[in-house]
Length: 211
Image 1 (tube, helix red, strand yellow):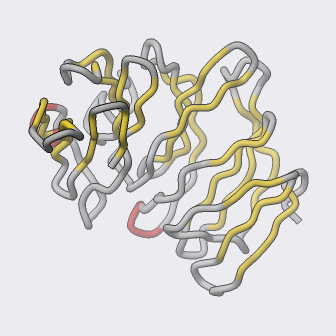
Image 2: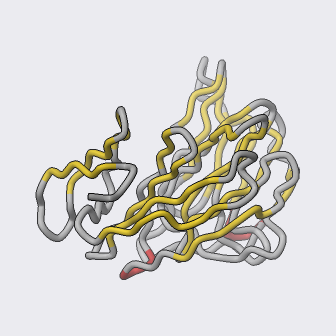
């Protein structure tokens, strides 16, 4: 669950996004993303922490023209959907990063790392990364203008150089060793720390090179 003041936001495994009062647990609003957005998930259902930023709550229904959506956090009304971008939800919790003067909403869907303008829903860039079962449960991490992503099942991950304004990316390096499946990575002082899915080892990669 995501806590924002006196409200709690949670996405159920069956794709029901609910806003509740933290005082008494009463429902404030509720949306079934499978019905409203024709949402699709990987085979084991939905699993993400909705992201609250400003007046909006962001979630990943995985529907046609609605892989990612922004809702009014107070009412649940739709503010935008990711027009032109349609991929299934893949367990990833979205994150907000700032590049220059611009915020960029970043997440992973069934086959892509994606950056979206949080104000308009415009898809700024995508980068293909595929895994078995279309699982992408690890939220990308950023240090400076370098974005790191990873997935399990031997698919590994890589780094993207993000432009100064966040509007585009270029591949920096890729790596097959650190194939974290579910539990996240840590970026600290130019290094990526995480565990592998296939080899079950704790690993450290150099963010600048992937070594």
